[in-house]
Structure formats: C-alpha cells, structure tokens
Image 1 (spheres, rainbow, N blue to C red):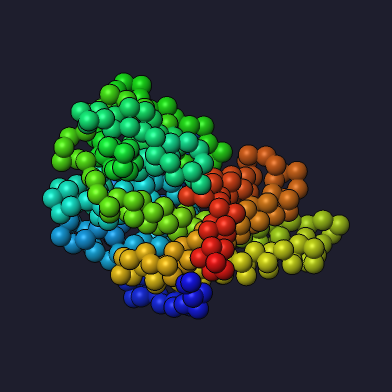
Image 2 (image 1 turned 90 degrees about the vertical axis):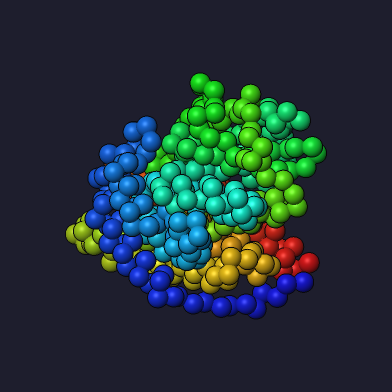
Length: 375
C-alpha cells in the first residue's frame, strides 16, 4: 500500500521565472477581448501568438536538450499552463507536450531524436487515445493489421486540425502499440470537428482507416502500456493546472463585480451570502495550486511512481471541482446577465465543463485514489 504521507512541495527558480514571464505574456497577449475574438475561428488561436510562444521556448520546455528542448521536465511546464488557463489562452501547447512525453517514454532513441526536435520547434502534435468518449474505458480497438494499415477512428482528438503529427494508440498483433501518423497521410475528410461546450478549445474525431504506418513510426513493447498510463496522468495534471489558472481568473471576475454592482443602495459585495462563497473559491483555488505544484515536485525526475500518481489524481479531482464551483457562482452572482454569452462568467463555466471531462472527471480519479490509498 502506498503512503499518503508524501507532502513534498518545492518551487524552483526556473518555475518562478517561467511563472513571472508567462503571466505577463498571457496578460498582455490574451486579454478577454482577444479570447472572444478567437471563439468562432477555425483553429481557436492566433498563429502569430503561437509563434511567439515557440520563440520563448515553451514548446520545448519538457523536451530533452539533446532533442532541441530545454530539458526542464514536465514540472516546469505547470506555471506556463496555469498562466495560459488564467488568460483562457487556447493553443496546441498541452497537446504537443503530451505527444512529446508519450514519445519520450515509449519510443527508442532513433524515434525521439528524429521526432522531438520538430515538436520543440513549434510543429503542433497531438495524441489520439479515445476509442469512445469514456476516459474510464482504456480498451484500444483501432487496429493496425499485419500490413501496418490502420482500421478505425479515434474520438475527441485535441487540436487535430492543426497537428502535423498524431501519436495514436493502436492494437497490433494482440498488443497495445503506438503509431505515429503524419497529417499528410490522412485521407480527405478524415477529420470531423467536434462541437464543444468550451469554444476556446478544439478537438475532432479522426478516421485513420487506410493509413499505412511506416515501420520506423511504429512503437511496440512493454513500455507502451506504461507510457500510456503516465501520459494520461500527465494530461490530468496539465488540465488541472489550466483549470487552476481559470479559477483565479473567474475569481477576479467575481470580485470585480462584487465591488461595483449595487443593489438596494449597497454594494453586493457587502452581503455575507456572497462574501462567504467568494472566500470558499479563494481557499479552494489556493489548495488547487498546492496540489498542482506538489505533483510537479514529485515529477521532477520524470518518473510517475505511486506518490506522483496520487498527486496527479488529487490535483485533477480538486482543481476541476473548484473551477466548476467558481464558474457556477460567477453565473449566479451576475444574475440574469450571467446567463448570457456576453458575460465572461459563461467562458469560465464552459471551461469548467470541458476540463471536468478531460482525462477523467473527479469521480473517475477518486475511485482510483480509493484503491491506491485505502486498499
């Protein structure tokens, strides 16, 4: 049985520097008006802004130096993703980072040295893991036959329309494997965009049928299953970091409204019925930050052991529930206006609904935490 007593929490100089730079960058480059301007666009983000992020080195933060990255590890990406969440900035950064981690953990040296430099250089990549819409079902049904031809599709592939490379979980010779598919290998009409509740995000169902996987782009062996497990946990942590940032922005929106809106001649922020939930959001958001940086601390060596798994699952469960509560209160506090799309509270409650479902909701992770902590 794993001990729940590991409470290590460190905040490195690199993380502090990245947080300061990322907060300033995201605040200046992604004001809420710019976020709204991207809601109806095809890609959901500004390509010029993505290029600036790449120049800052963010795409390669967790990629080894030998492959063109900074080699700082996944923990150093947390402050950047948290800042992006606070600015509601949608880009392929999380998708690309997860693709890189999956390759890094499962691929051989030739594959990582060939493929990771492009990701570190800003070529968007993504992972295709879901054969259905249930994160709790890890069954892989997308088939790679003996001729290395794919048969089947994946659902809710993040940033599929802009990704130049997709790392796909497949079933090959009765075992789970990974296939690396280039965007130019997909057939016309293979990408079916999803309609999402969070319009700052993009995903699609992708039909991989008929794609011939190059022999050097197939990853097999016992490391694949472990790498997929680790990538799901890292995905949960990155979504938790993003949700933590969004909770902070949602809280800012609430406080600003409580300080300016008057009812019956008094500022509504003076009423205890609104004060107390606002404080609850603040304390829960601070706890979310502790959870994500605790997990980042345990991942410094890149190994997702039992303690790191517990930390990632705790972070995801707590952070998304905090954002759900904050988004709900933001809508309610704004009254009738809160139910209109013109109100920014709508952006946060929609982000909460999306974040809750990614890499498993709170119930999904608590069910697995029970086995880890109480079995």
